Length: 347
Image 1 (cartoon, rainbow, N blue to C red):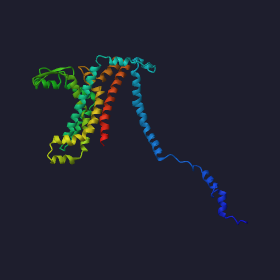
Image 2: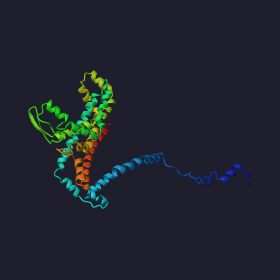
Image 3: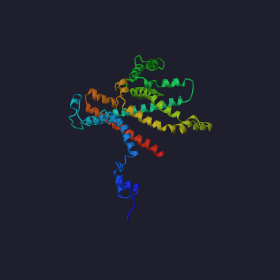
Image 4: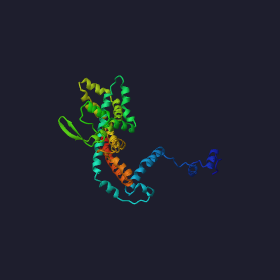
């Protein structure tokens, strides 16, 4: 049977392989990149995030992680300052920890450090809370007073310590002059040089650790403006409706604070307790500038300095610093367990 002429469209399709059957499939496979797909949007976003985060990760590794790992390595070596040139000649030993833990004064220093840290933390946060509540309401000159509250925090610690040493000087300090001439003290008090001072109060006498209390008072005075800023910022964000309703219902100021304000400040106060405890526990400047660690004020940070400078014992200083880090890690774990996780479970 004779076939008719082939249509032009059919012939073109046969030449290009665009017609039905296997020729069409070969044409689709022949196009470059037809069977491949690029990375998904999530993968591209993940790669971009890694690129953006990598500088911060690198800085943390260089500034935090590597020095901490190097401190761990040095704490297991018998190193003195003269041996630092051979620091890569690593010989691990536990003698540093035996020396530190076997010291007769270690636990006295730990107790002093805990008293100093807890006392300074409680006083600074308490003073910051009281100041923030007092300066919360509007009154003429409030901004000026708020600015003056920040002065102790911005003063250089060397200048502040010099002022306090002058004020508390037992010979010509204004505090002792006022106490002897006006308050009737029997004799001047060595606030920064006496380990204990006999105090008579309401007919009861007791020996107060006057130097340690003075250092704690300085720490609280120097750092309470930070707690003031944190707490005041949170107070400014509290809704006033609940307090106004409680005031209309006849609630006293103490009741309004206890049942309305305090629960909303618990989060920021918990964070302040953690930060202030960590910073006070490892604080060296304040104690050393005021007393050089004498008169019962030698904290662990001062002892680390003594190991490093007075004894030239780098390994012992590293071991003692590592033990301090363990205490701070435990404090952070307690905060995370009873602070962060508890708040997340309540949401």
